[in-house]
Amino acid sequence: MKEHPISDAAAQGHLNIVEHLLDLGVDINYRDADGLTPLALAAREGHFALTRALINQGAKQLLHDTIGQYPLCSGGIKGFITILKITSLRNYVNILTAKQALT
Image (cartoon, rainbow, N blue to C red):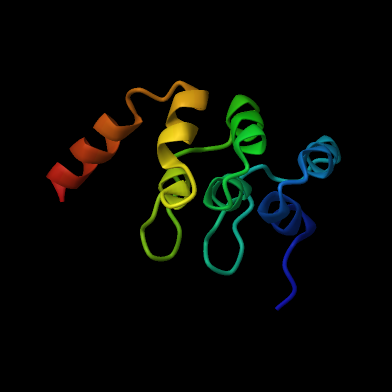
C-alpha cells in the first residue's frame, strides 16, 4: 500500500514539505495503515524540529497507533527525552502514567 505524502515527508524529516501539505489542507493527524500520525513518524525518526512544528500547529499528542503507542513515545530510542525537553511537555509523562494506572 502506498503511503500518503505527508507520512513520507514526516518520516524523512522534510519540514517544508509537511508545512506545504498542511497549507494545502492535509489532515495534520492523518493516520497511516499502522495508525501512525505525522507526529509519531517525525518523533520516531528523531526529527526534533518537525516534531516541535507539528505540536505547535496542533497535532494531537494522545492519538495512539494500532499497538497502543503514543506519538512521542515513538521517539523513545531516538531521543524521547530530547523531544520532551524541546516541546516543553513536562506533564506528558504524568499523563501517560495516570492513563496506565487506570488500565
